[in-house]
Amino acid sequence: MGPSRPEEEGRTIPLAIELRAAAYGASTEAERECLEAVYAYEEVLTSKNGRKTRASRTWQMIKRHGILGAVERAVNRKEETVGYTVLLEIGLQDYAFEAVVLRYPELFSIETIQRSSARIAGWKRT
Image (cartoon, rainbow, N blue to C red):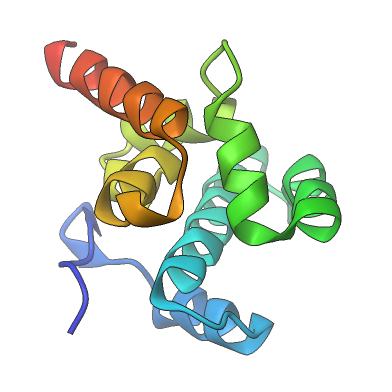
């Protein structure tokens, strides 16, 4: 069994997110968790915007670089992504790419691991 699932207002993230990630065809647990992060972000955006909202730029990166390559690129941006900020605000920080990187450090570069650690440490201070 994987890491514990984050909760939002006492409810677990919908099973639909996990099913969508599984249906995408992830070949590893790490890829599945990265996809869950994208789907969770889309759910938050949809709720915030009042209409279905896709993480279009993220999906473009996934198509070009694969899921792990896209995560690597997203985390290594100098500025924090809107995605993790939004997830953090509602207590879903375990779905942030940075959290996934730290759960599977063997799959990512040292730079990505360091940036993830620094960001998460910063979140904990705020």
